[in-house]
Amino acid sequence: MVRYKAVIAYDGTRYSGFQTQGESLTVQLVLEDTLKKLNGGKPVYVHASGRTDAGVHAWGQVIHFDLPQERDAEKFRHAFDTQSPEDIAVRSVEQVADTFHSRYLATEKTYHYRLDIGRPRVPFKRHYAAFYPYTGDLDVERMQRAMEDLIGTHDFTPFCATGSSVEDRVRTIFEARVEENKETQELLFIFRGTGFLYKMVRILVGTLMKIGQNKLPEDAFKLAIDQQSKDYIGPTAHPEGLYLMEVRYDGKPKKAYQEESSN
Image (cartoon, rainbow, N blue to C red; front, side, top):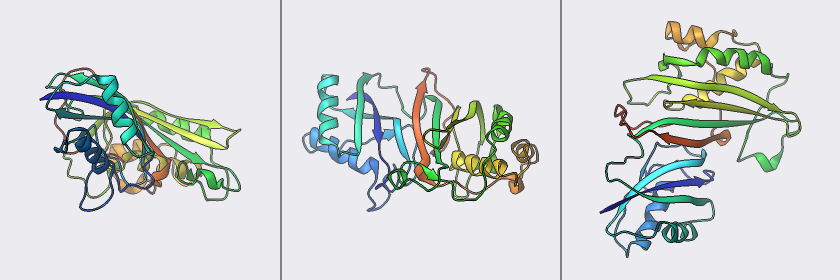
């Protein structure tokens, strides 16, 4: 068997997340159906860097799969891409060592979250940016100062949604910042770290919105982490604003977390 690594992008609007679950339409199901056709009708199983929830998008999701023979990578990428639905793009395909694993070897992930703060809301953004429906402006500078408390290695248990089976909830955040685009009337939240817990990014954004409204203290993240308390966190932000942008690898296996999922 020959192992391949692929980077894919997808519009998550019509999918019930990445991972196959029952009869629901998922990104994994569609990818495996396409690969099965390209493999002469024989099943091909896809492994991803992590799951994304229903409605969440990706620009840099990484997958790996095995084929029984070597293929020209670019020709196979083209076939894989053109045979996939129009809301999935295969950005690259490369042959890798059979020890490569898209999830266990991932050492860094970057997520973006887009928030539409315009009035009135833009209907064309409804699947691609979450809308901020509340009255009053968000204090962007206050939110940016608050995000500084996320940098470093912490136990992020308070920011993990119910339903996760992951036991080790310590993660390292390298970058956390927010950018305001006055022309498009959007906020862009950027998070880069070793990994993220179940719905963690969306909970961070929901908390930031409360901080920006002055409904939570500016040091809410520090208080939640230090006290391991959910008293200082906000609601889970909607999924349509979230994008998995990039997954990086350094070749060294990380601790095998149980199925780490995002978000």
